[in-house]
Amino acid sequence: MSQTQKELKLKHLFDGGAWNVYDPNVLNLGVGAPGTDLLEPCCDIFHQATAHCLERERSTNQSLIFQYGPKSGNFEVRREIANYFSSQYDVPMKSEDLIITTGATQGLHFLISTLIDFKGYIFVDEFTYMIALDSMKEFTSLTLVPIKLNDDGVDLHDLEEQVAKAAFKSNDKEFWSIYYTIPTYHNPTGILFSPAVCRGIVDLARKYDFLVVCDDVYNILHYGEKPQHARLLSYDVSSDVSYKGNVISNGSFSKIIGPGVRLGWLEVPARLKPHLLQNGLIQSGGCFNNYTAGIVGSLFELNLAQKHIKRLHEAYKDRMLATIEILKSELPTDCKMLEPSGGYFIWIRLPDPLDASEFLQYCLEHEKIAFIVGARFALANDMGKQHFRLSIAFHGKQKLQDGARRLCRALNGYRKTIKV
Image (cartoon, rainbow, N blue to C red; front, side):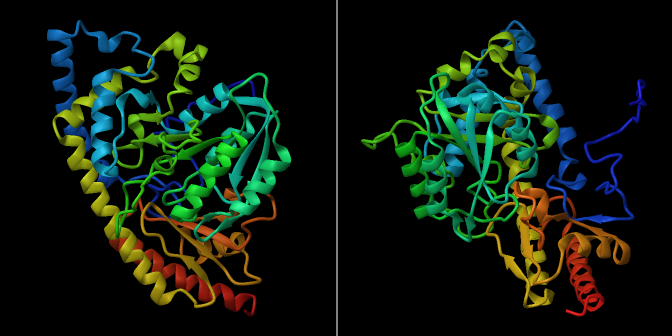
């Protein structure tokens, strides 16, 4: 192994890889991030918000934004977040239930390290966010268990069967296990979990006392009828006789403001917040992102965040509907496409015996198009062979329409090479 390091001078997360999303020679339809055109206004609105925030710090707040912040995050910032999402969800979000994080992945890592018995289990959907899987695998003493997915959400029978088989009483941590999911516009499938499935998850969590952690990063990105309940957390009602507080909502501004802001939040039940605030990491450093949280608080105070989020929402909707229209028209009829009603992603299943990895290589060679194959989202090695995920977030509408047409053309060409 080399003992020296080379400075690559990279500019973004996707730089230096085989399928750089900024590379004009390859149309990368896999990256789940907003594109340059959507992020361009951030320089101006963050300039205004920073000036607003720092002037107040200098004049009335003793520059405390540069101090270790309160462990939950500044009250005014949490209040701005709670007020905005209360209006989006049509149900109250309480500032006292929030803990500021640096994003959903860090939030997940924080929850696992604090609340879960290290001899325990993590239950995941059979297809799920691939980087979350990577993070979970770092906890090598935990056992990861995949659970079947249906078109309306997780298979409740399989979830209960697996949970009942593994359940034990933890003497060390608050929970013996966690079920991690993305119930609203699921990554990678785009599924919106049905009310019946959401209620069933909460019932099982209470029955077997495991923690449910929801990546709630796409919830307000609906492109048709607004969901009645935008969060699985809404089904864990505190007035229920059986209520304990088993669900945590893990939010982020990465998809709706910009990933580089590195700001998110956890919405946690009252019984769990003290456990999280006793974690050594947060006791040592206080708020995980105190400075940027203050700037984003001003962004909301000035109504700049609201306008920016609305602009991104409208762009995503336009891109999703346009891409879906092309695929519905030109995708071979023996392919299965889950048509999402919100979020970032389109999930496609190829017919037997087509292989998504081989199709990807064909697309790169013949159309210079890239996507992410289904196996990347699966815990089991034999899953996802015929699936792949497309993202509508990065490229503009015309590029996506062109890419969808070329993808379908490539699929017809690929089929001919294997006589299907």
